[in-house]
Length: 445
Ligand code: HEM
Image 1 (cartoon, rainbow, N blue to C red):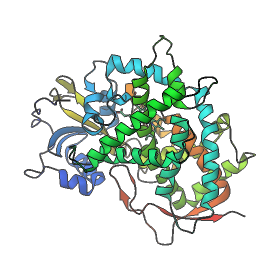
Image 2 (spheres, helix red, strand yellow):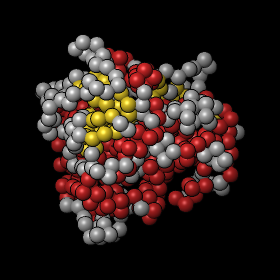
Image 3 (cartoon, rainbow, N blue to C red):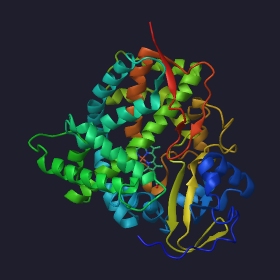
């Protein structure tokens, strides 16, 4: 997709950074502190220049509201995400705008209704049970990030594609990881043997394979996987997807679900391992249920675990920056923004806004419970799942995966970090402890 002429943003707060490179080096070195420093210097709306592109960041609940409640169709998600995802996920939901997006979202919502989610619980739980058993056989400390990443890839294969992949599972997972790696690489040209080139080839293999699975699926009985649900999904208005659309959506869903939940769950484990008090409260909740196995309706009762997850996502939002591009010139809170301006909502700064959050740097899950309920102070205070028309469809799905995993894990093991361990975070492409989070899992009596 062509990007038109670069907009002139010099009238806005902010600066261009160093000659030639702009803020790129600062950003790559430490994107987290870069955002906070720019915000402290220039306020909740500032321009910057990263990877040779000038753009505008906003970081406050009021600005986020202006950005997400987009009645005049000023902010294009498709054009915002295109540079990063366009070559790999051109038909994904986030890569569609306005009227077309509404139609696709209506059909896709069928795969996220209560009944469909219950079916996913049945597919996911046995895989989680096996993984939690396996943890007990590993020698401590266990690097949790790769462990979670692998587990969630396996659950994704079962839930999204729905076939027993057997030996093929490794190859599909490898192709998928190659695509994800390519989407995040800074050199974005298909020069032979580069990660980008490999990513495009892996994408083609996945598309071919998903078409095959779709063609050969057994339609003689109802199935619980997402591919089958999307194949049969009809919106209330009677709209449905064709085969190409189903395959594109499944590929996108794999991407949207995977690294985000891996990052969120890893950061949650880190927070619990460092907070014995909250770990004990979450465990008491898990122990109060009669069995290791949970049905979908039991999950709503795990409110402490949900508050802990929400708090980990507040402190460490996996999607740290949500992009759009202006469709035409507009004004935001008195600032004139030209047409075709890249814009981002910064979730991290928003999530530590001291006018909303008490002791914003501390892990205090009860800030989400009554009577504190700090997230209710502004509709756009808590944004790990975005807001507005493109709000994440997978919130409940990620809650299911995290709750099932923690429920089983906390009933079996006490979690702790090695003595003297302190977090050193890596922020790109998704936030996580730089050393993969080594955890000691002590079996409970
Ligand atoms: C902790 C886990 C997750 C986080 C933090 C997260 C975050 C987000 C965010 C911030 C957006 C909005 C992007 C935008 O406005 O441009 C989004 C969109 C989306 N997410 Fe998630 N996500 C997570 C898990 C999932 C899962 C598990 C699925 C699927 C099973 C999923 C499916 C989607 C879809 C389909 C969209 C696009 C919605 C649209 O464009 O209408 N996400 N996600």
